Amino acid sequence: MAPLLKLAVVFACFAIAAAESPYRFYTWNVTYGTIYPLGPPQQGILINGQFPGPDIYSVTNDNIIVNVFNSLDEPFLIHWSGVQNRRNSYEDGVLGTTCPIPPGQNFTYILQMKDQIGSFFYFPSLAFHKAAGGFGGIKILSRPLIPVPFDPPADDYTVLIGDWYKSNHTALKAVLDKGHKLPFPDGILINGRGPNVTSFTVQQGKTYRLRLCNVGLQNSLNFRIQGHKMKVVEVEGTHTLQVSYSSLDIHLGQCMSVLVTADQQPQDYYIVVSSRFTSQVLTTTGFLRYANSNRPASGPLPGGPTTQIDWSLNQARSIRTNLTASGPRPNPQGSYHYGMINTSRTIRLASSAGQVNGKQKYAINSVSFVPADTPLKLADFFQISGVYHVGSIPDAPNGRGIYLDTSVMQVDYRTFIELFLKTMKILRRAITSTATPSGMDGGQWTSASRNQYNLRDAVSRSTVQSWTAIYIALDNVGMWQLRSEFWARQYLGQQFYLRVYTTSTSLRDEYPIPKNALLCGRAKGRHTRPF
Ligand SMILES: *[C@@H]1O[C@H](CO)[C@@H](O)[C@H](O)[C@H]1NC(C)=O
Ligand SMILES: *[C@@H]1O[C@H](CO)[C@@H](O)[C@H](O)[C@H]1NC(C)=O
Ligand SMILES: *[C@@H]1O[C@H](CO)[C@@H](O)[C@H](O)[C@H]1NC(C)=O
Ligand SMILES: *[C@@H]1O[C@H](CO)[C@@H](O)[C@H](O)[C@H]1NC(C)=O
Ligand SMILES: *[C@@H]1O[C@H](CO)[C@@H](O)[C@H](O)[C@H]1NC(C)=O
Ligand SMILES: *[C@@H]1O[C@H](CO)[C@@H](O)[C@H](O)[C@H]1NC(C)=O
Image (cartoon, rainbow, N blue to C red; front, side):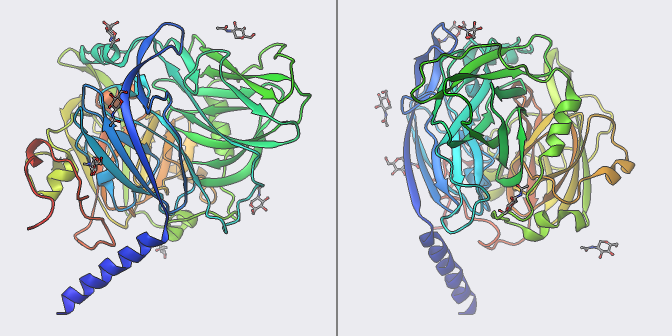
């Protein structure tokens, strides 16, 4: 009797917890459509006819139910970049956790914005769909009684910036599948539009929130507004010390919120976005438009930083957590006092590039990831052996040449690890919000570098640049993808999965497989619930 009773109580708790938070329902129809972002027509991926897709607007702890109808002629998945999906990697929308939605079918994602605030985005994770659109903004606002460290803005704009190709996603994927590198992109888009199209209207004297995300494929971008400063207030769910900048580097996959006050003469002002660290500089322009002004933007475009990596690293280091500001802190012991916790394991990751069987590949610690025929998470659930093996990627670079494998690293739940990303330009982890970059340096890492760490108020974020030491509290059981945000590199193998493992089967640690889970590969025809 006793064990049954306990189970019943656990289920009851769940029902109550879920009932407290509102549900928001979305129905999305994913289709191809013709778009003209850089002039010539090309095939894009639209959501409900829109490119970019609609914003997801939510409040901390909201349940977000998105029923996605795949009207493309190929399998499709959406990844919720930066959304923690706590205890629920089944909903992560990457091939290692979730079966693709077959053409003509639908799948309902069940997400909870648990203990999160901030600015994020979603995008299609399969094939090279990201090059065709299918992305959109995610806003998670604080709950009504939680103080926010700035006044409510007059408006809250999603600003998705990214480099873009005139070639369609099928053509780009074919280049990679043949073993070649991608050419240089053709331009930069702001909210899906090319030069001199996108504008944001402001009223003189008012302050606006811009949620900037780099949704591109290849390039870090610099963002600036003629005659206006931008005050950084939030980075991927952390309220930051509020510092003003005249231009900001936004690396692939990163998001941040800035406040812009319309404190100039009423007229139009240029918004400029340009590529960073490239010999040929791509530039695009949009407008900050004062209401009731008929004066077009004029004068020279504001210039971006001319120095390379140092400027960018200094800026990244200057963005720090406001320790006194409110904000959900899912793991107070881990994130808030992260500098005092002893790490249980040190993992060093190095990226490499090279040819395997005459084709371009990218690797982490020599392993270039190859997807399995069955999502790794489903292989775990159904105990299907032979899909992958734990330990298929070493904890540190070992100098081997690049080889192919379905790389999975196992780490223990509730431990705290130190992760070094050496020469790994950008790597996104989807484990928790508490990956805290603590040291950042353009040079070489030695153990003495630990003395340089910011052990107090680094911001936690899911994408980091250059070599960075990050601390991760492994507080989220599941199978989580770590990957390069250079989209061609992750496509050609620069990714692996972290299996955050516990022997516990409690619902407090991990949610059960969703009732509507799609089953594919060797999991096809299995049953997600016992009869
Ligand atoms: C999706 O859009 C296409 C094209 O407009 C339409 O034919 C199809 O019926 C729509 N599907 C759903 C589920 O709304
Ligand atoms: C597909 O959509 C229907 C509603 O139209 C819904 O009942 C069903 O659960 C969805 N399928 C999946 C796998 O989520
Ligand atoms: C940090 O947050 C506190 C509390 O909201 C606020 O009063 C203070 O101005 C913030 N500090 C900075 C430097 O942004
Ligand atoms: C994609 O691009 C290729 C190469 O330019 C072209 O042959 C193909 O027709 C395009 N596909 C679509 C659907 O536009
Ligand atoms: C956009 O406007 C800028 C500034 O007037 C101009 O230099 C540029 O040529 C324009 N770009 C296009 C594609 O029209
Ligand atoms: C970390 O390790 C040191 C040395 O072993 C020990 O003194 C300290 O109490 C540990 N800190 C925590 C938070 O466990």
